[in-house]
Length: 285
Image (cartoon, rainbow, N blue to C red; front, side, top):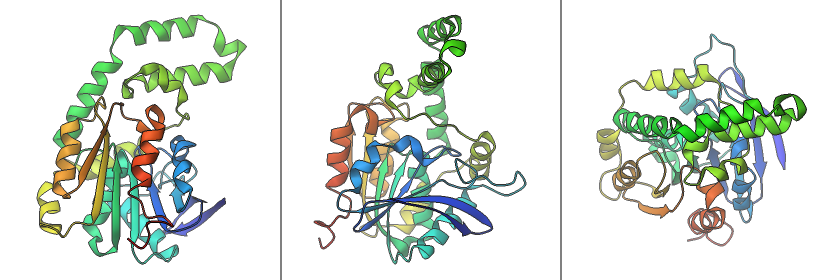
Protein backbone atom coordinates (compact mmCIF):
# COMPACT_ATOMS: atom_id res chain seq x y z
CA UNK A 1 0.00 0.00 0.00
CA UNK A 2 1.39 3.37 -0.99
CA UNK A 3 -0.04 6.72 0.17
CA UNK A 4 1.40 10.11 -0.71
CA UNK A 5 0.57 13.72 -1.48
CA UNK A 6 1.32 14.77 -5.05
CA UNK A 7 1.75 18.43 -6.00
CA UNK A 8 0.07 19.26 -9.33
CA UNK A 9 -1.31 22.50 -10.77
CA UNK A 10 -0.83 24.41 -7.54
CA UNK A 11 -2.67 21.87 -5.34
CA UNK A 12 -1.65 18.83 -3.31
CA UNK A 13 -3.66 15.71 -4.07
CA UNK A 14 -3.88 12.72 -1.75
CA UNK A 15 -3.09 9.52 -3.66
CA UNK A 16 -3.17 5.87 -2.73
CA UNK A 17 -2.00 2.82 -4.65
CA UNK A 18 -3.17 -0.74 -4.02
CA UNK A 19 -1.88 -3.86 -5.73
CA UNK A 20 0.70 -4.48 -8.45
CA UNK A 21 0.44 -4.99 -12.17
CA UNK A 22 -1.10 -3.06 -15.06
CA UNK A 23 -2.31 0.34 -13.82
CA UNK A 24 -5.94 1.42 -13.44
CA UNK A 25 -6.81 4.93 -12.23
CA UNK A 26 -9.95 5.03 -10.07
CA UNK A 27 -12.15 8.14 -10.15
CA UNK A 28 -14.52 8.57 -7.21
CA UNK A 29 -17.90 10.27 -7.35
CA UNK A 30 -19.37 13.40 -5.85
CA UNK A 31 -18.19 15.81 -7.09
CA UNK A 32 -16.47 16.87 -3.88
CA UNK A 33 -16.41 13.42 -2.24
CA UNK A 34 -13.34 11.21 -1.69
CA UNK A 35 -12.22 7.73 -2.58
CA UNK A 36 -12.78 6.05 0.80
CA UNK A 37 -16.41 5.12 0.23
CA UNK A 38 -15.39 2.86 -2.64
CA UNK A 39 -13.56 0.72 -0.10
CA UNK A 40 -13.12 -2.02 0.82
CA UNK A 41 -14.94 -3.46 -2.20
CA UNK A 42 -12.93 -1.75 -4.96
CA UNK A 43 -9.69 -3.06 -3.47
CA UNK A 44 -10.90 -6.52 -4.48
CA UNK A 45 -9.93 -5.43 -8.00
CA UNK A 46 -6.30 -4.88 -6.96
CA UNK A 47 -5.47 -8.56 -7.47
CA UNK A 48 -3.40 -8.73 -10.64
CA UNK A 49 -3.32 -4.97 -11.23
CA UNK A 50 -2.40 -1.70 -9.56
CA UNK A 51 -5.23 0.62 -8.57
CA UNK A 52 -4.31 4.30 -8.41
CA UNK A 53 -6.80 6.20 -6.24
CA UNK A 54 -6.78 9.90 -5.50
CA UNK A 55 -9.04 12.41 -3.75
CA UNK A 56 -9.99 14.98 -6.38
CA UNK A 57 -9.21 18.62 -5.67
CA UNK A 58 -11.58 20.19 -3.20
CA UNK A 59 -12.63 16.94 -1.53
CA UNK A 60 -11.47 14.51 1.14
CA UNK A 61 -7.77 14.76 1.88
CA UNK A 62 -7.19 17.12 -1.08
CA UNK A 63 -8.60 20.39 0.34
CA UNK A 64 -7.94 23.66 -1.47
CA UNK A 65 -8.38 27.35 -0.60
CA UNK A 66 -11.87 28.66 -1.18
CA UNK A 67 -10.70 31.02 -3.92
CA UNK A 68 -9.13 28.25 -6.00
CA UNK A 69 -11.06 27.00 -9.05
CA UNK A 70 -12.40 23.44 -8.78
CA UNK A 71 -14.53 23.16 -11.95
CA UNK A 72 -14.50 20.34 -14.45
CA UNK A 73 -11.60 21.75 -16.48
CA UNK A 74 -9.40 21.85 -13.38
CA UNK A 75 -10.42 18.30 -12.48
CA UNK A 76 -9.47 17.09 -15.97
CA UNK A 77 -6.16 19.00 -15.83
CA UNK A 78 -5.34 17.39 -12.47
CA UNK A 79 -5.98 13.92 -13.87
CA UNK A 80 -3.70 14.63 -16.83
CA UNK A 81 -0.99 15.91 -14.48
CA UNK A 82 -1.30 12.76 -12.37
CA UNK A 83 -1.05 10.58 -15.48
CA UNK A 84 2.22 12.31 -16.31
CA UNK A 85 3.42 12.08 -12.70
CA UNK A 86 2.73 8.35 -12.68
CA UNK A 87 4.44 8.01 -16.09
CA UNK A 88 1.47 6.26 -17.68
CA UNK A 89 1.65 6.42 -21.48
CA UNK A 90 -1.94 5.27 -21.82
CA UNK A 91 -4.41 5.13 -18.99
CA UNK A 92 -7.31 2.87 -18.07
CA UNK A 93 -9.93 4.82 -16.13
CA UNK A 94 -12.39 3.22 -13.72
CA UNK A 95 -14.93 5.94 -12.96
CA UNK A 96 -17.82 5.71 -10.50
CA UNK A 97 -20.86 8.04 -10.67
CA UNK A 98 -19.51 11.58 -11.22
CA UNK A 99 -16.16 9.86 -11.75
CA UNK A 100 -17.66 8.15 -14.79
CA UNK A 101 -18.55 11.52 -16.27
CA UNK A 102 -15.09 12.82 -15.36
CA UNK A 103 -13.61 9.87 -17.25
CA UNK A 104 -15.65 10.80 -20.33
CA UNK A 105 -14.64 14.48 -20.05
CA UNK A 106 -11.00 13.46 -19.77
CA UNK A 107 -11.30 11.15 -22.77
CA UNK A 108 -12.77 13.98 -24.84
CA UNK A 109 -9.89 16.29 -23.90
CA UNK A 110 -7.16 13.63 -24.21
CA UNK A 111 -8.49 10.90 -26.53
CA UNK A 112 -5.05 9.58 -27.42
CA UNK A 113 -4.18 8.96 -23.77
CA UNK A 114 -6.98 6.46 -23.13
CA UNK A 115 -6.47 2.70 -23.13
CA UNK A 116 -9.83 1.58 -21.66
CA UNK A 117 -12.85 3.14 -19.98
CA UNK A 118 -14.85 1.35 -17.28
CA UNK A 119 -17.84 3.41 -16.17
CA UNK A 120 -19.77 2.27 -13.10
CA UNK A 121 -23.17 3.91 -12.53
CA UNK A 122 -21.94 6.89 -14.56
CA UNK A 123 -23.48 10.34 -14.20
CA UNK A 124 -25.44 11.26 -17.35
CA UNK A 125 -23.70 12.89 -20.31
CA UNK A 126 -26.46 15.53 -20.48
CA UNK A 127 -27.76 18.06 -17.98
CA UNK A 128 -31.28 16.84 -18.74
CA UNK A 129 -30.30 13.33 -17.64
CA UNK A 130 -28.83 14.70 -14.45
CA UNK A 131 -32.04 16.67 -13.78
CA UNK A 132 -34.04 13.45 -14.13
CA UNK A 133 -31.72 11.74 -11.66
CA UNK A 134 -32.22 14.59 -9.18
CA UNK A 135 -35.99 14.29 -9.55
CA UNK A 136 -35.96 10.53 -8.96
CA UNK A 137 -33.58 10.72 -6.01
CA UNK A 138 -35.56 13.53 -4.36
CA UNK A 139 -38.76 11.49 -4.73
CA UNK A 140 -37.14 8.51 -3.01
CA UNK A 141 -35.80 10.63 -0.17
CA UNK A 142 -39.27 12.14 0.36
CA UNK A 143 -40.80 8.75 1.16
CA UNK A 144 -42.52 8.86 4.58
CA UNK A 145 -40.51 6.00 6.09
CA UNK A 146 -37.31 8.05 5.88
CA UNK A 147 -38.82 10.94 7.84
CA UNK A 148 -40.17 8.48 10.42
CA UNK A 149 -36.80 6.76 10.72
CA UNK A 150 -35.01 10.07 11.19
CA UNK A 151 -37.45 11.10 13.89
CA UNK A 152 -37.01 7.78 15.68
CA UNK A 153 -33.23 8.09 15.49
CA UNK A 154 -33.33 11.61 16.92
CA UNK A 155 -35.59 10.46 19.76
CA UNK A 156 -33.46 7.40 20.52
CA UNK A 157 -30.81 9.33 22.45
CA UNK A 158 -28.02 7.61 20.49
CA UNK A 159 -26.45 10.96 19.65
CA UNK A 160 -25.44 11.16 23.32
CA UNK A 161 -25.09 7.52 24.32
CA UNK A 162 -23.34 6.18 21.21
CA UNK A 163 -22.30 9.04 18.88
CA UNK A 164 -20.48 6.78 16.43
CA UNK A 165 -23.48 4.49 15.95
CA UNK A 166 -25.71 7.55 15.61
CA UNK A 167 -23.49 8.96 12.86
CA UNK A 168 -23.48 5.71 10.94
CA UNK A 169 -27.27 5.34 11.13
CA UNK A 170 -27.79 8.98 10.15
CA UNK A 171 -25.43 8.53 7.19
CA UNK A 172 -27.27 5.39 6.05
CA UNK A 173 -30.55 7.30 6.03
CA UNK A 174 -28.96 10.14 4.05
CA UNK A 175 -28.00 7.76 1.21
CA UNK A 176 -30.94 5.34 1.42
CA UNK A 177 -32.44 6.65 -1.82
CA UNK A 178 -29.46 5.37 -3.79
CA UNK A 179 -30.12 1.73 -2.91
CA UNK A 180 -32.49 -0.89 -4.24
CA UNK A 181 -32.60 -2.28 -0.69
CA UNK A 182 -32.21 0.70 1.67
CA UNK A 183 -31.19 -1.59 4.52
CA UNK A 184 -27.93 -2.18 2.62
CA UNK A 185 -27.00 1.50 2.92
CA UNK A 186 -25.43 0.76 6.31
CA UNK A 187 -22.79 -1.33 4.50
CA UNK A 188 -21.41 1.65 2.57
CA UNK A 189 -18.34 3.31 4.03
CA UNK A 190 -19.52 6.76 5.20
CA UNK A 191 -18.32 9.79 3.28
CA UNK A 192 -18.79 13.53 3.11
CA UNK A 193 -19.24 15.82 0.14
CA UNK A 194 -17.68 19.29 0.09
CA UNK A 195 -20.65 21.35 -1.10
CA UNK A 196 -18.56 24.16 -2.60
CA UNK A 197 -16.72 21.73 -4.86
CA UNK A 198 -19.90 19.92 -5.85
CA UNK A 199 -21.66 23.16 -6.74
CA UNK A 200 -18.65 24.55 -8.59
CA UNK A 201 -18.27 21.49 -10.82
CA UNK A 202 -21.91 21.41 -11.87
CA UNK A 203 -21.93 25.17 -12.37
CA UNK A 204 -18.87 24.89 -14.60
CA UNK A 205 -20.67 22.32 -16.75
CA UNK A 206 -23.80 24.44 -17.08
CA UNK A 207 -26.49 23.09 -19.44
CA UNK A 208 -24.07 20.51 -20.76
CA UNK A 209 -24.74 17.97 -23.52
CA UNK A 210 -21.73 15.90 -24.51
CA UNK A 211 -23.42 13.64 -27.05
CA UNK A 212 -22.39 15.42 -30.24
CA UNK A 213 -18.83 15.86 -29.02
CA UNK A 214 -18.57 12.17 -28.15
CA UNK A 215 -19.83 11.26 -31.63
CA UNK A 216 -17.30 13.58 -33.28
CA UNK A 217 -14.39 12.45 -31.10
CA UNK A 218 -15.13 8.74 -31.28
CA UNK A 219 -16.85 7.96 -34.60
CA UNK A 220 -17.55 4.37 -35.61
CA UNK A 221 -14.83 2.18 -34.09
CA UNK A 222 -12.59 5.00 -32.86
CA UNK A 223 -13.75 4.81 -29.24
CA UNK A 224 -11.45 3.20 -26.68
CA UNK A 225 -12.45 -0.20 -25.41
CA UNK A 226 -15.22 0.62 -22.96
CA UNK A 227 -17.67 -0.98 -20.55
CA UNK A 228 -20.64 0.46 -18.66
CA UNK A 229 -21.96 -1.23 -15.51
CA UNK A 230 -25.23 0.07 -14.11
CA UNK A 231 -27.90 -0.91 -11.60
CA UNK A 232 -31.41 -1.21 -12.99
CA UNK A 233 -32.79 0.35 -9.77
CA UNK A 234 -30.33 3.25 -9.84
CA UNK A 235 -31.97 6.70 -9.60
CA UNK A 236 -29.60 7.63 -12.43
CA UNK A 237 -31.78 6.46 -15.31
CA UNK A 238 -30.81 3.18 -16.92
CA UNK A 239 -31.63 4.79 -20.28
CA UNK A 240 -28.85 7.30 -19.58
CA UNK A 241 -26.30 4.52 -19.03
CA UNK A 242 -27.43 2.74 -22.18
CA UNK A 243 -27.09 5.97 -24.15
CA UNK A 244 -23.57 6.56 -22.84
CA UNK A 245 -22.62 2.99 -23.76
CA UNK A 246 -24.05 3.34 -27.25
CA UNK A 247 -22.11 6.56 -27.83
CA UNK A 248 -18.90 4.74 -26.85
CA UNK A 249 -19.83 1.61 -28.84
CA UNK A 250 -19.66 -0.27 -25.55
CA UNK A 251 -21.50 -3.06 -23.84
CA UNK A 252 -23.68 -2.60 -20.76
CA UNK A 253 -23.76 -4.93 -17.77
CA UNK A 254 -27.02 -4.39 -15.89
CA UNK A 255 -27.20 -5.56 -12.28
CA UNK A 256 -30.22 -5.78 -9.98
CA UNK A 257 -28.91 -3.00 -7.73
CA UNK A 258 -29.27 0.68 -7.06
CA UNK A 259 -26.48 3.24 -7.40
CA UNK A 260 -23.86 1.29 -5.42
CA UNK A 261 -23.33 -2.07 -7.16
CA UNK A 262 -20.03 -2.50 -5.31
CA UNK A 263 -22.08 -2.69 -2.10
CA UNK A 264 -25.28 -4.43 -3.20
CA UNK A 265 -23.75 -6.99 -5.60
CA UNK A 266 -20.07 -7.15 -4.70
CA UNK A 267 -19.29 -10.51 -6.29
CA UNK A 268 -20.99 -9.68 -9.59
CA UNK A 269 -19.33 -6.25 -9.59
CA UNK A 270 -15.87 -7.73 -9.08
CA UNK A 271 -16.42 -10.50 -11.62
CA UNK A 272 -17.61 -8.09 -14.32
CA UNK A 273 -14.72 -5.66 -13.90
CA UNK A 274 -12.09 -8.36 -13.42
CA UNK A 275 -13.02 -9.65 -16.84
CA UNK A 276 -12.63 -6.23 -18.47
CA UNK A 277 -9.83 -4.32 -16.74
CA UNK A 278 -6.23 -4.99 -17.74
CA UNK A 279 -4.55 -7.43 -15.40
CA UNK A 280 -1.56 -9.69 -15.31
CA UNK A 281 -3.56 -12.29 -17.20
CA UNK A 282 -5.22 -9.89 -19.65
CA UNK A 283 -2.53 -7.27 -20.25
CA UNK A 284 -1.41 -8.88 -23.52
CA UNK A 285 -4.89 -9.35 -24.97
